[in-house]
Image (cartoon, rainbow, N blue to C red; front, side):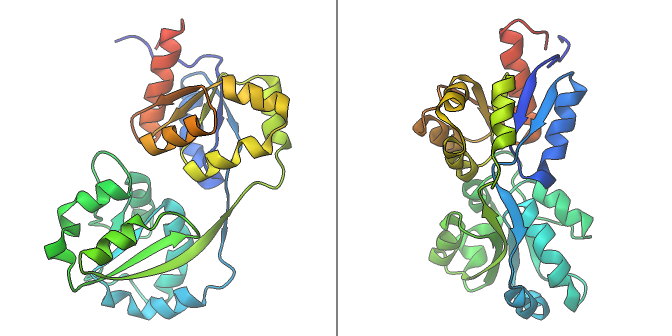
Length: 261
């Protein structure tokens, strides 16, 4: 096996701040330089009353789906005010990062996909089959906006679906660090959110937009790749899922361009 290396590569990490550290550390471990600029700013909702009302009723749900690590971090401190997580309420997570966040709150036996990490894959699991969810209550814990695929599909399968919003997303107010990073020179960008990606061109002046469109962009999901191409990015590299997949994609790319990996 050839030695993995990202030596000297300046790589933009655009995950929300609390989820960026793992990918940044992995880039550093391979000799690269992570440059951090979250494309989405994450903040708790101002009104936690809906969460407080749900707290004593979590036991009424057969499954509680957390759509992201942020959904865990911003909801569970409130939801657990009424007591420990009930044994009859099965937690589900879109991916392993979310499952790890649940584990930090002592919640195990989590329903989580083993390969691709998205709503479509979660819905393919046997726990979400029509005969398993019909007539049962399901709660979806999420941020503002986002797709309705999960809720709509479960409702068509006969589940009684509730939703609760625990965090909000917004475009960064100050894009100067991003413009400086592009001006200083970046070898690659990593993007893990279609919504954040759509915000990206509007944050830049014409000169830096050209730099952005010329840089290789690494994304861990086909839907994000489609968004990247739709906004005009020219070098879109689809990687395997999660941080490990992004690192793999970066290594293969730079190996093909003259770096040992």
